[in-house]
Length: 288
Image (cartoon, rainbow, N blue to C red; front, side, top):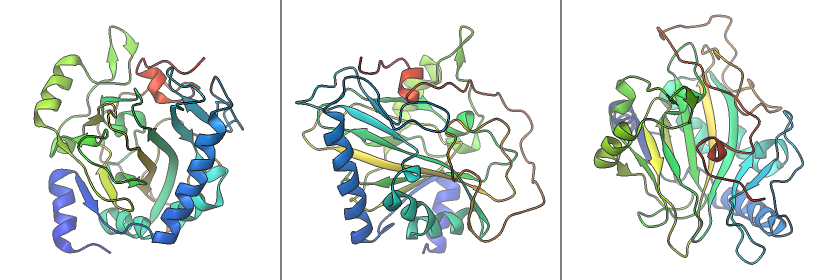
């Protein structure tokens, strides 16, 4: 599914945007389901269920949420409750692309949908996913499937090319787990970051050590991402899953490994909470 030049670009820059990660039919099915969840959120004033297996709310809205202008910002573990989302997580061109990057034996970790509905206040503080999901090796890829056209003005993901080759930065400040890197690193990241833009149905394949964030969506168009994290089959988690789910650890390509490969020297373990979403960890209040 990927050419050698694309694979080389991913390993050099730490990310790659590729088109046609799902079929038009798959994309339409995902968006129909998501539209139903957005409409359902209008009837709620705080995060709601059905709950995830660790008890957290399935659906999380920002503090600005109203029935007239919904601000649903997170769906946790959608593959647990939607056959459409499970099908894409398991069997789509997106999965083949990840396998082309980190090997034919591929394991699923977790998934979520991050939404930025029109004029919502949701933003993502700069961080590296590996700090949330440390493993024994670095073959961990976050696949961010674009459910809408992603542009520079609707809250696109912004990434710092090459930062995956540097250290994994702490998310602790003043003794507290903030979920974001320091203000100094954030300012430097914003100077060097580039937007990951593409048409609906494209995917941004991102190395889990890549520094990234995103601004609020000030446009009248939504920017929704279906985000799946995959690891090499021989990568073992070093802490419990931040989003436990019924498909965690399942092999989606190739076969399981009896061997654990280690290439990580030291890691800082995250704080795993049962907050409705990591936006709350980063200091953004939920509705209600």
